[in-house]
Length: 130
Image 1 (cartoon, rainbow, N blue to C red):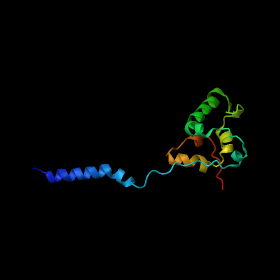
Image 2: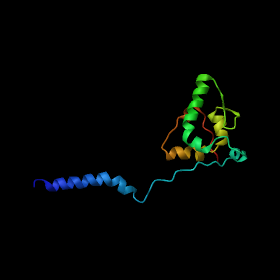
Image 3: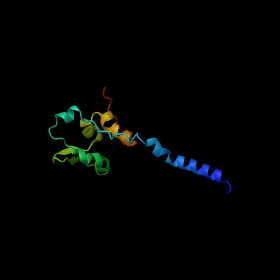
Image 4: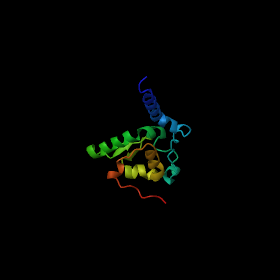
């Protein structure tokens, strides 16, 4: 057989390269999904939080886009909450009033998901707690 040594060596190298991500991840597992901290004075003072956790975890991007479009394009600055009360559609004021711990609330999940949102390109980032 011609060049059988080279073919077998090439196959071994190919299999080793193809399997290396799987082999390197054996035992390490995926990092744990972060749980955003809801430990802020504003949230603690609420009896019934305005935002529903399950809905906001999966839909906050769409809600913020809708709010942005409604405020910028339609000059509509209020939206009803789940409690029926009208709230100002404002990331800096309404959202960050309760979630003042940006590093432990926003950044933790965005870092985990490797997402770099452009919210703070226009909005003023809240000062770091500490």
